[in-house]
Amino acid sequence: MMMEQIIEFISAHIILSGAFVAILALLLVDIFGSSLRGYISATPVEVTQLINREDALVLDIREENEFHSGHIVNAIHIPLGYLKDRKVELEKYKNRPVIAACRSGSRSSSACALLKKEGFDKIYNLKGGMMAWQHASLPLDKS
Image 1 (tube, rainbow, N blue to C red):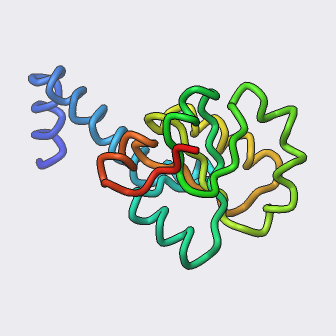
Image 2 (cartoon, rainbow, N blue to C red; image 1 turned 180 degrees about the vertical axis):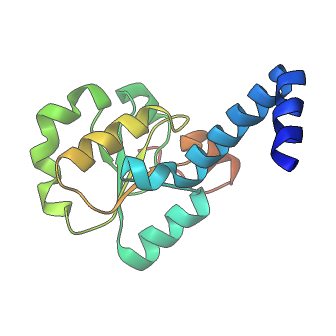
């Protein structure tokens, strides 16, 4: 009886049912996506904890002018376009957490995927990027 009502509801409200399934799928991807991707999105506060407690490395993959406008203290700068060619420079950090940072958090996800392929295990993506870092009023190095 219950199954018949569900089927009747779905057929009567196909758009609503489709929207529900789409939202449910997006929610599941958001919840379980980081384990599937192989890296974790970390908020600015979580990043500061990783830096302070686990000596995490910050990898800033923005372009030169973006980097010099302000970056996280002690960040290593390798623009995303050069990361594949310069990945050897990061080998010595394989046992440390590595946090990829860009302007908004979208480009750095590509860097995280590349690092995962190269065998890095503790990879984090700065959620919201440097915009979120600045919004949280965290310190920037402008040198």
